[in-house]
Length: 108
Image (cartoon, rainbow, N blue to C red; front, side, top):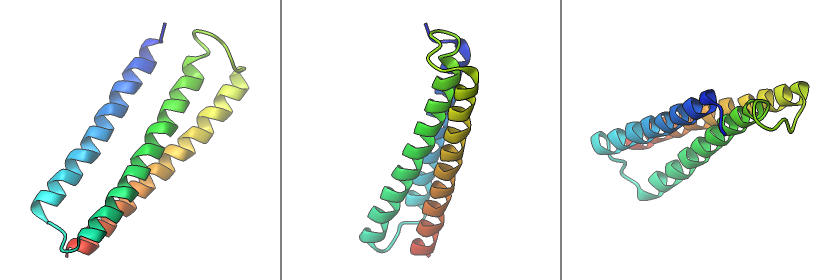
């Protein structure tokens, strides 16, 4: 059984990804890029960033959530995994921001 905070965290991650996709769709609708190659590059960058932040957040939730169900890790190991996954999520957010900056430069 999955703890409640993990279920809530998965729902929050889903809405974060939905928000990023919605914002990108809005930008493509309002400010279309002139070059199709730059759009493909930006889409790959955004997809990589979203994948990294999603994976980082899910691993962090799973590490701490596993302590409540089946303790596969000790508390110290779970905290280390959570901290590393938090750094991965922050890197993913940075890559998403870089993708949006590149799109705004290419569409101007």
